[in-house]
Image 1 (cartoon, rainbow over the protein chains, first blue to last red):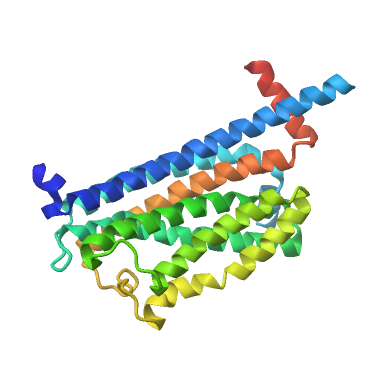
Image 2: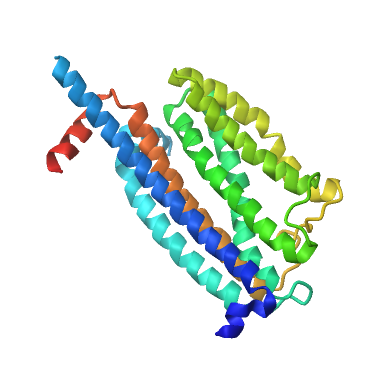
Length: 54
Length: 247
């Protein structure tokens, strides 16, 4: 286990790369979800604005 | 066959069927990446030259591959939109850009972390592979900035499509940079068949896993893009009104 973590002295390089990849992938998913929610909210607001005008 | 594509390009139909594919791609992508990473990071033997540092390849190569793939998707669909005026293809191009930028960032960052112990430097200005990859990041930024700077969506589509198309010249430069010039970056390993199977197979699994995750993210973003572009269409108004009634 500790051998795996140490990676023969390259542990900091290998695991920071892997960690960064995980963070970026999760961030991509979070940003996509947020964008979708914002689009839905914007369209909802526009819808109510046009209804109020009519 | 053609009716299938024709239906797929229809925004409401795409919006309805996309979630099924997103779910399948996301689950398969995460499972494959977990399997590939376990085998690559833990099971695969040590490289005789680079020792354990070579294992960075399992995140670096998939992200670099997809950073270029995303650019190709962006440039090709923008061109299709330009020529045939298919609404969905401009939406695909717009959705690919932020993802491409993130994968380019990831490839640059993991490459930098790999370069430190192997080359003794985080970054080398003027290195052809590194510089052309950085240029691609700026092309993505430029593409997104141009889109958001133009209010008229039709004009934004056209102008950004031209930028994407011109910038596509950079793709073969990135790919062949390690042959055309002297670079710190190592030459091709995967396509050249230089890796033993116990190292190569986990890498191929990770490339496929990353690709599926990318596909899920892309479809998800295209879906939001389609919804926004069609916001005045009847089906979108009904859909949003219906969802707000539920929540």
